[in-house]
Image (cartoon, rainbow, N blue to C red; front, side):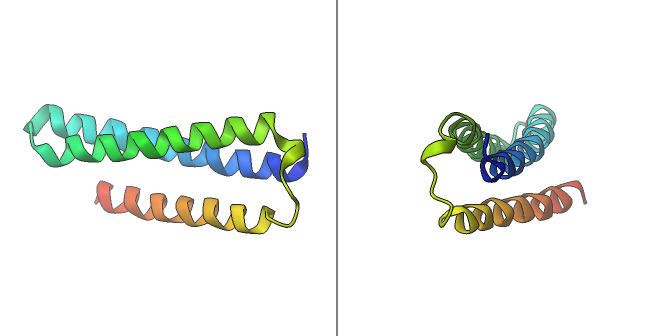
Length: 94
């Protein structure tokens, strides 16, 4: 495996971990309140989780077709998503 694909996969896996925590938190909120907002947040977090699963699998299985010139952009997007999810988790926990 290329080191660039490994880095991208690690970022995607970190995103999946945070999204999994968010889904659990929102599911608990929905169970307690039956409000529609946590249900919508579960759907959004679930779709982002699916996006990261597909991305991580793609990085693992198709590492030979990724261009090294696009790596910084893909890494930037993954890190921006990770930063946003960390902030979202912090706000959710407060």
